[in-house]
Image (cartoon, rainbow, N blue to C red; front, side, top):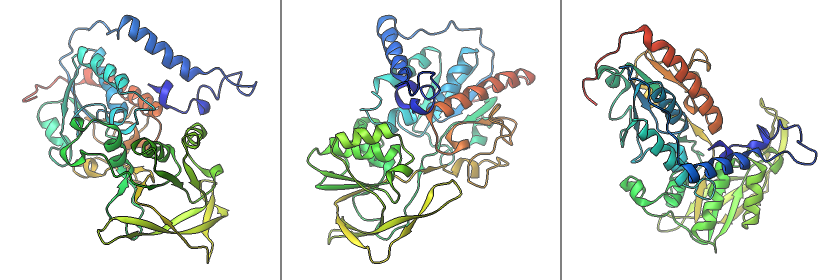
Length: 387
């Protein structure tokens, strides 16, 4: 998985001894090819099951962290049930990453492997709103792992943001890339794809959105609008290369100030202002500063807000004594263990670190799984009252 979607140029390939002479070994592509070749030739091998331990684990979230924990604990003989809000398991891997970056068959093969390991899935269950973590513990689960990620899109807080055809990135991507029967009723149907689409943001999610827009309507003009320059963009350079190859236009040093609507309540234009770079902020990036008198209007009929993600606070706020950080993420004593302020609850991934890489979520989740496996034998197993 990580050989396809993680920034290898900053990780394994960045550490390659051949990096810069002139290029590193393409570790990511070699890894992806090797896994595909072996899976196609021999299938997905499933480890020999060990004797059941009698312990039952509830995993909240069927994304990268949740699936990593489920696999590790199932291989150790623990019973695992994964709960997820989407109609199908897979989380980010199935719903958040476009098909042109990760074919759906890859996460589906992983899910098949987990089912053969006797991992159970309960989908369409939103923890916090319909059921709480306390309810899972009350039903007899010996431990709960929270891996629900960071899925709450950042609003822009700009006038006109509530107009028709102004989308958050998650809604736009799932409606544009996921089969309708895998979606809840309210998200079925392709997003609007008119003459001009503007995507606001500069990360990898923004690049996913501009490239999705090109596929929804190859005739549409697609703009990526970013308030700094390309040098400050947080996403991968490789993704911007692909976007340019597909005809995406970049509007640097540009900030939308207001979205304008037509008589039908649909977005029809953006009032923007040009920016310049000022003094560095706390992260070392130069702050964008508005240039007075540089206002202009850009006609658009679709807008996508790709401004990053926060942790949905619902689970933490409905779980007594579960401590949060000042940023709203779940507090853990250490990423080496994933232990939270509740002795029966562990957490890892984006709901702890904030929106980050798949590989970091998987690595932290595996560490948490090891700590869960070490801790469970110190307590007698409970008895599940209901599945």
